[in-house]
Image 1 (cartoon, rainbow over the protein chains, first blue to last red):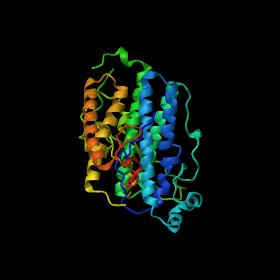
Image 2 (image 1 turned 90 degrees about the vertical axis):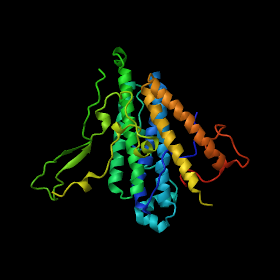
Image 3 (image 1 turned 120 degrees about the vertical axis):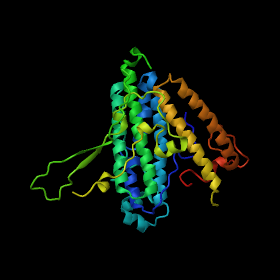
Image 4 (image 1 turned 45 degrees about the vertical axis):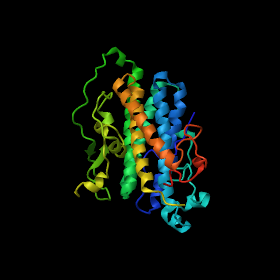
Length: 189
Length: 80
Length: 86
């Protein structure tokens, strides 16, 4: 069951009015390595994974929805006051023609989101290695977004999101260790 | 074995792509790649030092050991 | 729509900080369920977060739906501002 909390996980701020950044940010909204893919991937895998890691997949999957909301907030703040001309000049003309200022689940190139971006093999090791890879890919994507943006407040938010990927990757790596079941054999200090 | 995490590890590495005499553009020289803490720490040991809550929020993690600040490395490196 | 007071942002930041510690501890405990000290810290912060939210909600309306927060007479749950607008 999901409860929604009416607050962002992190205080997103955008200091420069630059709708062009929204075109790139959307990669983490509807892209292959973005937050929607992450949330749906983990929340779906958790039904067929050993009990001891279901909590982790549930909790990280839920956190990814909070990150999806942060990306949406960044895009919203960058585009809500833009005229159609400004959106077109920002490279968002194709998006505007279909959606006006509405957000949509597509990547920076306009390719719509697809379940082909995610997988659930039913094999816990395969699933967890996909999850680790997904986190590293997301981390890298945030690096490329930070590289292209010179908005200091926006970059604080993007750095937060990148750091979260580092932590998530760490947890999935730990989950693999847990499933290898070698840890219980050693004395915990 | 629960070995202690290494005391130091670097979080950014470099390599030099081969430059051909026939390449049209000025060589980039050095390429950077990120090697964040999760590669080196292993299973997180208990009782790691923590950031205070507000600092943790703005850094994106509760534990300094995992913190990895990122900025565009191509802007910072000197021109060849 | 009226502008939000400074207090709104300050209280919200406190809550976001406390809740962030809770998220980090939750994920940590998912892979370290036997760390009693971490469980204690988790419960301390859970208590602290609830207190902060009680204060916030009394001034600015409920943070959760479906009965997880109490509602005021205006059903402020459905009112602006929404998190992406703040």
